[in-house]
Length: 143
Image 1: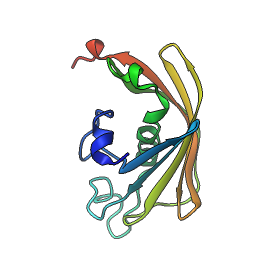
Image 2 (image 1 turned 30 degrees about the vertical axis):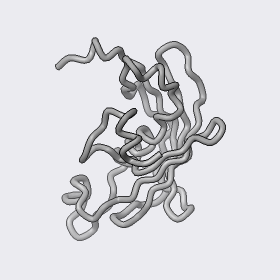
Image 3 (image 1 turned 135 degrees about the horizontal axis):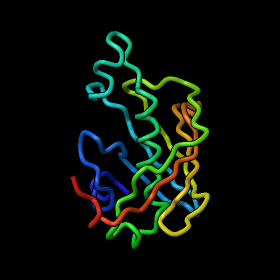
């Protein structure tokens, strides 16, 4: 699935769309995102040493997990973070790196979806953790 196909499912748009390609194989999802040189999140983090913030790595893993949620559940709902557990940061990520995410669902009970994901660059673990999402009806999303 390419970026344009991903946009048909994920509500994210630039500059917060953090998945370039994604594929579901069995009960796992594999996604990729290449960190561009001019990403808003590396411009000031840190000058002279642009490193991808950990929260952005978590967001890349979260967005990469979207194919684990049945598409019919996403028609009238938006998946919002409900929690991050046991998140570990192992290696830094920089502009030019391609982040490869592997994720699988742990549980899906009612509106709660729990996923385990890991992000790697050049096969080196950068981040891993358990992510929880609540499927919130779009009608309830108001400013």
